[in-house]
Length: 313
Image (cartoon, rainbow, N blue to C red):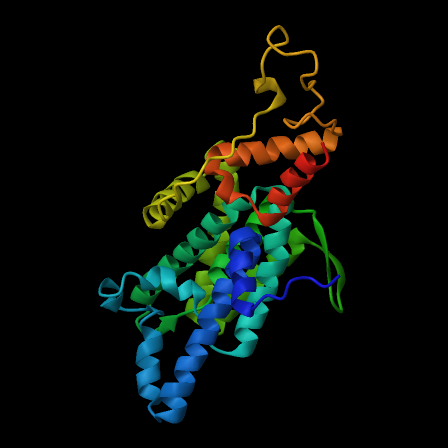
């Protein structure tokens, strides 16, 4: 049986609803890249005004001088801007690999805060260095500082974790991190993309400190996620007036003295059907999600899982 046909836009929406945070970050970077590419085609290609395109792009890139005071949002927006196919492909491949490794060790809710913190740290280091070396005039763009934060966070968590590199073979993360540091130091020494290399080191340092603070009991992702939840709550549409579906845990059912003889046991679902231990664990996870975010927050697969249990009772 063939699955339901969906549009590209619908696929993107589904990724934002239920995809991993790594995939969402990759999608945002791709969308920004394609958007800038289309603007470049129109302004620099059809209209023959490359300076207009440059002005438009610089609206989102981080300047090295005092202009940043007039464009403070660029400290955030620059980390999603790429120009050049190889630039974005290289960055997003590393983001994909290390973002997935990161979620092996930690909850993925910490990934977005780390990405943003790393980008902010890299941007600040870049700007400060530019004030010391005025000759380093230009703009900063790209997700490299954010990605370096993720790479060094993973390395700090598990320095002996082994990955396999093409043409090289198995490499421990600590040696890969050391090679990246040496690469950036060489770039600084030879004055090649000096600002970018300083930004990489700033992001990497943030990733290291982020994990050290987490190990000390200070989770820097908490205030960030709290802020995101508040902001997203402002734009969230009001709930529709419809009957609310409530699923109760077996532990929340009536006590044995109040139950009829045919009431579900502790190993039953709220529908009275015997379930396995794995199924009960899945039910508990879904019930927790409903209690925190409501029934509408469930994915299609989670809703189908509940309805299957109901139909099979």
